[in-house]
Image (tube, rainbow, N blue to C red; front, top):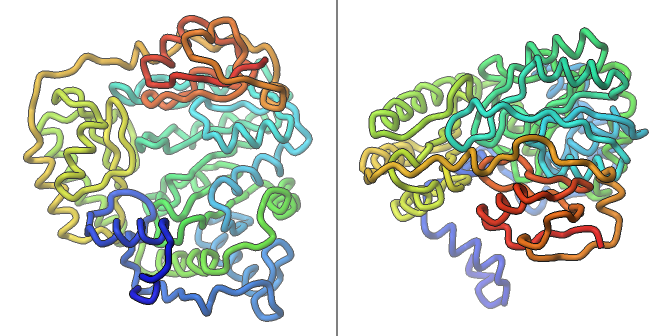
Length: 448
């Protein structure tokens, strides 16, 4: 470390400064900076060589790593990504809908999927989340809503949903996959926050999904950018690698790929049992939080994600995050309603004790009013053009209060509720404007 002190390197300095604070990490990456079994160093930062294989034409050690990952997840095919879940999502959509056409999307979609749909010329058909997760949370996609969307759009190339969501809420993948199989339409799942769910029999591949994009670094001991694309659709498998190569860097990180390989091996030997032990600890913390007066998400959720709904105790999620930060606990996400904590087996007992004590001492105030209804549109906006056309047209940035009647050139996603209020190509109405202003989005790009 001292060897670098003489250099002017602000990013490096900021990382060293933050690491020196000794904060308890309840955010990504899942290794929490404590993985002794990740002996990854600069001398291993290699490139495509005769002995190290090549990611997009792999037939050696990388392919062997992918085969072992596929066996672990119970997938017919697994591909490695060092370009994060973004690359896995791009590759997944390209493999299943590379020629454009319709895809049925859950509305709580990540921007990487929106951008990929735009580049691929996909026509989105939207399914709204039902707000069943709790105050301010986006909620779940329901099988009946998927059935109706397929019935109205039988020519769709795929159904694409996000589960779990950022708050840990799980949609019923088993029932949704049955609906999709009934109509012969593949189910694609953005499982970015759920790679570890394999430990609980809740992984979407286990439950019948055709393909999943899994951001392993979020919850497993993987370097940032490590992800897997799992596929169980025989027709799409031959297109997976070429689809990922279409978007991916020709210089993938060997350190990140090696960390994926090591994390899979750790999961097979120790990780599943350690995640199950962690789930017991998180269950105890949830019980404590409920006794204190926090709200908790409703319905089936990720067993190890902790989402605290803070408004019942008189504080926004953002203010609660500041409270926890002052006590040494850094959460993953906060908004007007909730604070979200990612726990993994690499959180120490002292981390967990610190979090438990901060929850127990949380100040209680008068409950704040529910804002979720005010932040949700009554229905889908009017579509004026496809996302690709909207995003590639000339646009201008204008104050949100002047945007009514204009066509959006970008997605605007307030948190809460974590569902875009308007997508590229959709008409902005007065309700949309009110939501943008209430959620601190002062400007928006619109078509000129």
